[in-house]
Image 1 (cartoon, one colour):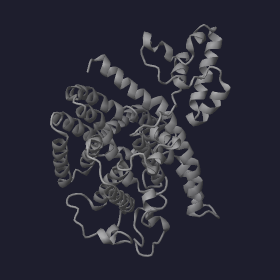
Image 2: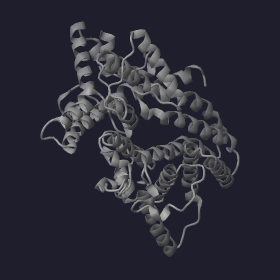
Image 3: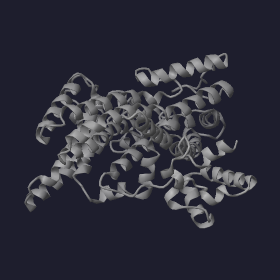
Image 4: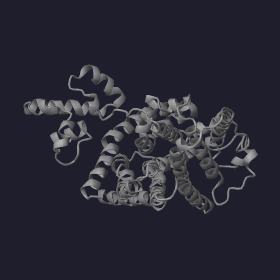
Length: 479
């Protein structure tokens, strides 16, 4: 029991015994180790209870009330902003949009369609720009571009510094750690959903349905089903019914492998040649319909451009003003076309008819415009270095969303589809005096805070620990 409390109260501690360099990481400190067993157990309980609170609640309280609190050891601390941290903030906003969409679209399917589609449906959420606020599909394409940028930025930076050998030497470790980083955090969410919500409580709804997912007959059958679900997550083609949103993880892993391969293959060529080669691979992937991989490659090109930009000659004032105006136009178009309807005749609805004639090749029309808009969005933000938009994305609460973004992406379906949330909404809709909107508002008001809380716990107790474990295993095996 004491070991469990120590794990909960200090989630960043490694599995193995502390080494000499890590002695200072124990949140209880050396003085706590000298306490009697009862007092030490009480300290562990207190820290465990603090850890169960959202970090943005516990940190300010502990800072003023707990004499043993140390800021540098707080597992919920947000890193200071830097030149690329705004992308983490962007990822946090995108993850929040996905969570909001999945808490909304099952009750209001018209949100997926454009203005007047189907005929007679005219809702404010179907308008251009407004649709972007609920465009989870667009947010997923932003994930892919940002991931391509983030994964390639470190190796590319070494290449620009003339340290290609160092960049190549780090790729095996990145290859080893990437699947652990992506798939380990899925396990506790999938296990909790299958065993607790589905098997024990029979309290989990199927996607776009008012029917509960049936549990397996025995615990062994549920365990086998959970394993099959996890394999489906790894493959990415057929996501499990308990976590349909994780279809993106297979694409994330495949895109990561392509990024590492391109970093390895083009590490010794000039930046201009490398961008030309990567752009060629992007065009091929886009042509054959692999838009997910193409977005990763686009992110890599943008990262290379960022590192190349300081060495370019300065521009004249008039040219700078023209480029700034063009950049704002690109941002405007990205937010406009990022709301392209997912279903129906999107190209024939208000605001999108002007672009319906443009061929999209082997990429579905909605994925084409979401992908193009994601590239345009990240590109325009990159060209606003130090600007107001980047500063907004570096705000503390936005960076917090960035830190919990992966946890929020994984847990929001579990939190929104159980009987407490969706079941309540469905029952209220059938009750006298309740409209669909007011019933949804009650469910949304309960669901989203729970999503943030669960994502915060997942970030500190699972996500960070998975990253640390992957690093330790890589170091242990000498990769």
